Image (cartoon, each protein chain N blue to C red):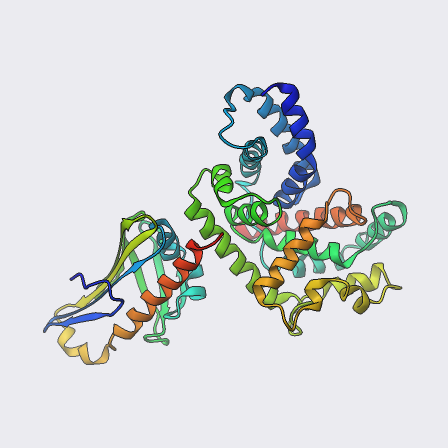
Length: 154
Length: 267
């Protein structure tokens, strides 16, 4: 699923899965976005949806993420794909988060983030999992703001 | 460029180069050695200089690479470096006597609050990742442009901007949390404590208010306060200031403590 670059989240619900996606165009080189998305300890400074990330975001890395979506819970995630400046995937048994970066002009990057969760027991727990839409929109907005501030550094 | 031209350029820029190296390595000896090695390497590679950058940028590139080699195996310092080193200084029976001796025998042995602020900045900057520390020093203290820093670090301008932005953000957070000069709740009072010990006749409040950073607290935003702190550093040559011997001795102490601390932490 690749939504339009509006910064608005789109969610598709199915019986055994749910997928949320967001896209936004950011006036910054994609290496800046990549640096922000892979510097775990710096996340809480600029990303209002992240309380903390422990561990390193690197190939095969393990991270422990606390999100404002569910502050009492620690998500134990593995980095599954790490293609520098292009694609980052992390996840657990229930689902995975995919980040993609694509240059669409000088200092202009198309950012997409999707998260698909699901499995055989998904119908039983679906109602307990909060909507990601607002969190995704804050995430994309924060990333855009921070990356563009960096890009505008003189 | 001839060897004579290089020698002239190098000697003109040597004080800046040495102070830059001191602030990266926290060692006067290493700064001197790396500066010397930089000249030797530059003279050996003189035929490769094509004038694609200024001589200053080329020399700082060589020096930065040598400094990175020197620092690669060493751990970065911690944000609470001043707390750790203060505790060790208090426990060391000769530390204060040595400092008093420097103060009474050296023409560069004065304690000045403004110099201590820049000393503190040097120590705290060593808690940044090395690339971030190098970027903020080159940009804010030694007046290099983003494009020149990208050449020096062999990276892109985008990444230099990232390093600059994140290093500034981190420094602001650290000083806001620690420095009692800019935050009444700050945990570090080392400036006033050392002033009381080594400059007891000097009223700290009077001295403090001579420093713009401490005067503009009401109006200065956090970015501006960091700029003023960096401006102070820019104005002070750590090898020839009124208190250079005092602060260099203090820095050597902190370096020794932090290298042992880092080694122990790594075990």
